[in-house]
Length: 288
Image 1 (tube, helix red, strand yellow):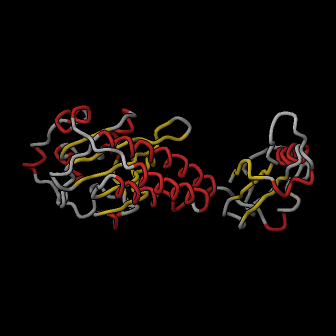
Image 2 (tube, rainbow, N blue to C red):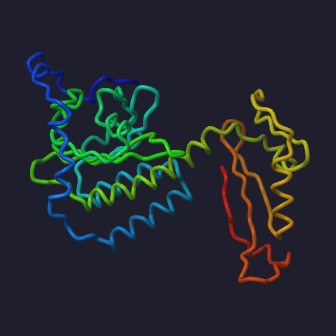
Image 3 (cartoon, one colour):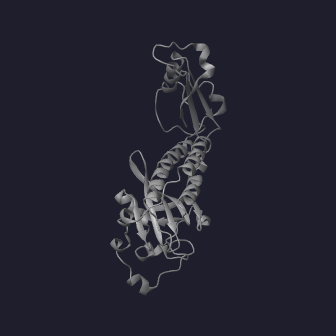
């Protein structure tokens, strides 16, 4: 459901609309260069990143939510979120903290600070952004908002952001570093999840023969793409030539597919790989 303002916002009056300020007046990015910043907590950061990596591998769909919870904790923020650009609106894909209950709500691109972050493709730090973006007028107020873009195929597609709702907490360069790092996880998690979720899937009876020459899976849906049905056959042939294996997995039509290639680990230059070593092969690459 699309909303034109933050859920729970108070509608701006004519007086407040008339008193809106320019983006320049809420932009405080320069303050990041002059503010003192706290020492990194590498121990806590390492633990958090290990959890994110496991979540990315096991459950990419939930990884983005875990990511904003991590941002909330590491940056001592009051609200943290991920906004995904979908056409002309941003959708709150993941939320943690004060506004966690408003996940999946949307805001028009032009009404959100995320639009500026996407357009300029750089980090943004804003003070009381509701003075420029009245859709954010709410209680508690967004006192400071730090936004970092994340990308798919080199193009910004969304933002990872943290917010403080009190005037004492001020974000610094350490917060910027952490959120920038988390934005790279967001990019990987989003792309992996989208590929898994949007695939047509493979019928159970087709899994065993999907690697045969000229075979194409219908996924139980009308085919919309061409092809000769040779790609997967070549993948398996190349994997087996190197002592590896290739397999396909799918939960069925509409649930996407995974194609897993396993290759044996080479111990050093000139070491021959025996076919009997296949059982010790590791997952070289997983393509949902």
